[in-house]
Image (cartoon, rainbow, N blue to C red):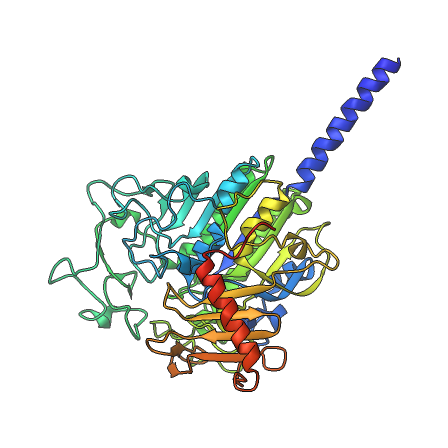
Length: 514
C-alpha cells in the first residue's frame, strides 16, 4: 500500500510539474501594426475614433507609456524585432525594394529560432518586407528561399514586400500561392515595355491617385513602386488583406492549440495604400486611414475571440505594438491629411514615421496574459527589440552571447511585476544607417543628425524636410514634444549623452553579460 501511495504521489508530482512547466511557457502572439502612432488608439487618448478591442486588450493587461520600436521605418524595425540587433549595425537594412534578397541570413538567431528550442510551433502571417531568396533576390517562379523558414519559422503566409511595392501576391512558405506556370511572374525596376500601363500614363484609370513616387505598375486601380507582369491568378485584392491574415492566423492557432505556439501577426494596416475592406470604409470621419485603424482593431478582436473560444486566454501572452509612428500623406491622395481634424496621430509627441523625434518610435505597446499580467499602466521603457531576450528568458532558453546583441531581458516589466525595471537607455534610428539617431536615457533625449545634411523629416501634419542642428537635447519630462532644445543650458549632460551614444555605436553591441 505504501509503495502504491508513493507511486501515486510521484505521478501526481510529475503531472503537476508538467502542468506548471506548460503554464510557465505561454503561447505568444505578437501583433504588429504598421505606421500606427501613439495617439491612434482610444486607450492612448484618441477621441475621433474608438478602438474597443485594443482598449480591451489594454484594460486586461499592461499598457506602456514608454513603449518603443527601434526605428521609425518598417524594414529596420522588423529586422530588429526578430533578431534583437539594432538595424543600423547591418548594411542593407533600409527600406527593402521589391527584389531584395533575404536580409536576415540563415543561421541568424531570431525570436522564432529561440522559441523553437523550447518546442514552440512558429508562424509569421502578414507583411514581411525583409527580402526573400539568395544574393540574387527572389525567384518568383521557383523556390523563395531563404526566407522565414530558414530563420526559425515553421510556416509563413506573407505579403512579400509592402503593398505600395510590387508584386501583389501571397507567398506560402517557399512558393507564390496560386501561381500559374503558363503566366510567369516578372518583377523589375525598369518599365518592361513602352505600352506597360503606369500611374503616369494611365492616371485617369486610377481609383486612388498618387501624390508622389507611387506611379509605376497599376494593380486593382492603384499604382505602385516598381514594375511587374504576369502572375494574374496569384494576385490578390487589396481590400481582402486583413481578412486573409485573420483567416490564416485562426487556422494556425486552431492547428496548434495543444502545443505552445508563437504567432507573429504582421498587419499591413495602416500602411499605404490604405484600402480597407468595404465593410469598414466610411466607418470613421478620418478617411481610409481612420477606417484602416478600425479594421486593425477588428483583427485584434478576432484573434482575442479565437484565443477565448479555444480556452487559451490564460495560456497565451499577447503583445500589441507598431513598427513606427504615423504618417499622413505617404504617397497617395487618400485624404488622410485633409480629414485629420482634431485627431493627433502621434499623441503629445512631435514627429512620426522617418523621424527620430519621439513620435517616430514611441507607439502603443500593450501586453496581456490573463491571470499573469495585472491590469495597469507602466512608465517603464520597453522596446520591440527586447522581445527576443525577454521571450528567451520566459521560456528558459539560453541566449547565446553573440546573438540578440541589443536585446535586453525586460520580461519582468512586460509581465507587470512589482518594482520591475525596463531598459536603461534606447537608441532610435530613422532608416538604414544614415547617421541620424536619437538616444533616450531616463528623461533626457539626445538627437544626433547626419552631418551630411543635418536635416530631419518631421511628420506631424504633413511631410517636411526641416533644417535642424547636428545635436539637440531635450528633457522629455518637461518637454515631451521636443520643442525646446536645451543643449546650451546643459552642456555636461549633452556631452555625456554624446559619449554614451558613440560608445554604444562603436562597441558594436549594447547587451553584454547581464
